[in-house]
Length: 168
Image (tube, rainbow, N blue to C red; front, side, top):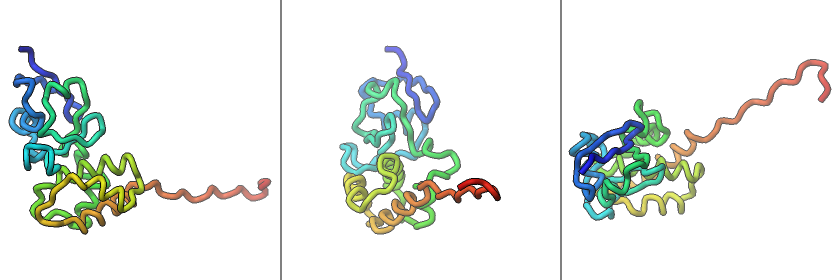
């Protein structure tokens, strides 16, 4: 069988794996991208969340054959220098405790902020409802999402000064 070509974080990777292999294991074991975590293996905890064509997707329940030709973004590809507003907010609000669920939470937050730049508490609840944080950092998580939204919001621009003697 020919290799499967994946577009991960903007780079093409040819992988020689069984087409039914979950994307999670190809990312971690074949491509050595270990930021995406294994939590449950049944798409219930959110630790394995990646973006598939910009949409938060559980990598543990997605066969690699189903993602060929699609754009995959992992936590490693969210921002090379950790400058994504969600990453900055996570640090500012000291969200992680053990950190195991955080890459999935960050990927879901990034997708939420793209869809809803000013998420309400209900939007946040809906977005993270499929994630399990064993350490219970949910209050810090909520605060960080709001901080990230504020960081990502367009900054108001000052009005341009009117030239002296110009008609108003």
